[in-house]
Image 1 (tube, rainbow, N blue to C red):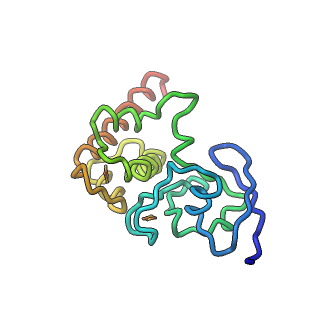
Image 2: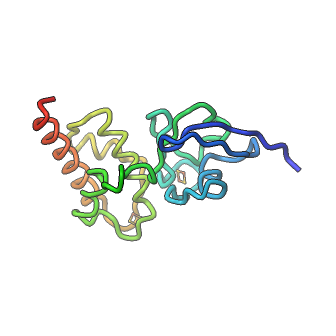
Amino acid sequence: MPTKTVVATTINGDPVEFLCEPRQSLLEVLRDTLHLTGTKEGCNNGNCGACNVLLDGVLVNACLVLAVEVAGQRVETIEGMAAGGQLHPLQQKFLEHAALQCGICTPGFLLAAKALLDRNADPSEEEVRYWLAGNLCRCTGYDKIVRAVLDAADVGEIERLEIGD
Ligand code: FES
Ligand code: FES
């Protein structure tokens, strides 16, 4: 029986403790132990972006992070993106642009796009495409996703102008 470790972390703003084996990935623990199944498993080897989460604000592939590594860190998953029942502007724009079909890639794209807009609130189309290059989608052809991200950036720009930021 492998030894398990207690890991204390913060997930979507809430303190969380879980038990895991040293070999287990963050993706495995999120989905199978904590039942946060919004984070998807695609390739399980760092090539598709379906498992993207933010770790202390940095975009990572949860399949490549050991769960024990998140001790003391802040994990953000797709379950934390809508605040108080209000969709994040990126989620809203993905819906409006029909930027999803089967939806397997969508949480990863949303987290990746959030990481981009958190750093660069007004990216060019080229910057959006470059940033999202690590996320694969077999359905949409990418254009709708890029339009949704650019549109969400415009919403953020309007909100900043309205509050005089
Ligand atoms: S499942 Fe992690 S990058 Fe594909
Ligand atoms: S919507 Fe199906 S893989 Fe992207």
